[in-house]
Length: 427
Image 1 (cartoon, rainbow, N blue to C red):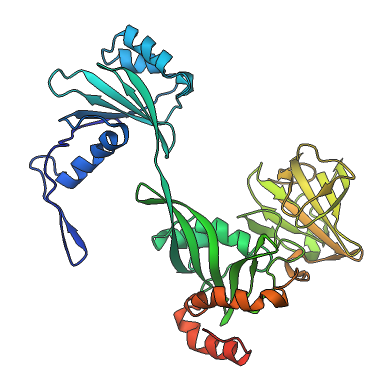
Image 2: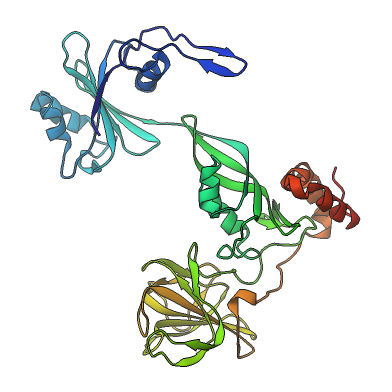
C-alpha cells in the first residue's frame, strides 16, 4: 500500500515516562504523534549518515516486473544518475535483484521537492541506500541483532501456535518446542489444559523479536505430570535432558512430519474409503498438504523405495533388528534416496502426496516391531545416553535457577513435593 507522510525529523520529541508509561504529544491534524513521526525517519539518517532535514518520505513496495530504473524515472530522476548508481552498486547490491513485495522509501529534499535518497529493504535486516543528489553513492546497512533470554507460558486451548499468538508471544516458539520434545510429546495429540513453560534466547531486531533462538529450559505439563527439558552441552554436543539428567532424545521421533492431524488411526477393522471393504489398517494416516516434508523417525537403512498399487510411492526403512517403518502415498521421493542408503533421524525421505489408492493428500505411516505391526502412536523407545556421573553436579548447578519457574502455578506445590521426594533439590 502506498502512503505519503511528512516526517519532521528536527522536531523535538515530547516524550516522558511516568511509572514506566510512555507519554507522547499528538501533532495537530493527522492524528500521528511526534514520537511516531520522528522515529519513522530517524533510522534512515542514523544508519546511512543522511543529513537531518525536513524530508517528505514516500513509502511503496516493489511491483511485479518493476525495476530500479522505472521506479526512479517515474519520479523524475535523470537516467544518467540511474546509470551512475548502477555502476556504484557493483559489489554492494545487484540492481537486477529487486523483489516484488519488498518495501522501499523515497526521501524528497525539502526545498526542491526532488528525490534525494531511495532506501530499499532487501530483507528485514539488510537495507540499501541510494543517494540520488550531489555525492552519488550506494551503501548497505545490516541492522544488528541482539540476543536476550525471554520467558513464555501458555495453556492449550485451541492449538499451541494459536494460543502462543493469542497470549502475545512469538508463535514460532512452537517450532522450537516441537524439536525439543520431538521424542516425548505427541504434538498431534495436545489436549486442552496442557501447559508449556519455556525460557528461550530471543533474537531482537530493531527492538522487535524476529524469531526464537535456542531453548534454554522448558516444561510440558499434563494431568499434574511435568516433563522438564534443559539444554546442556555434554562431550561438546548440545542436547536436552530431564530434571534427573535422562536424555530426552529417544531412538525415534514421535511423528514423521510436523503440524498435521491424524485422519485415521490404527485398526484391524477399518472400512476402506475407496473399496468400502472392511480390513485391517495397521498404520496411522496423517492428513497434510501435498509437498509437506516427511522425515525418517530414526537412523536406519532404506530397504524399499518403489511404487505399489495400493501404497503408491513407498519408502521402507529398517532401523535395527527390532524396528522397521514405512511411509506410503508420497508425492515424490527425496533427491538421492535409494535402496541401501543409510538415513539419519529427521532426514527428509519424501513428501506428502496422494499416490496409489488414496482419496486425498496424506501420509500412511506404519511401524513393525519384530515383524509385527504395532500402533505408531503407542510405541515406546529407549532413551539415549543420560548425563554422565562426572557432569551431574555441573548439570544440576546450571539448571537450578530454572526448575522452580518451569512448573505451572496451579501444579507447583504438588509437583515440588513429588520432585523433592525423588531426591532432586532446588538450589
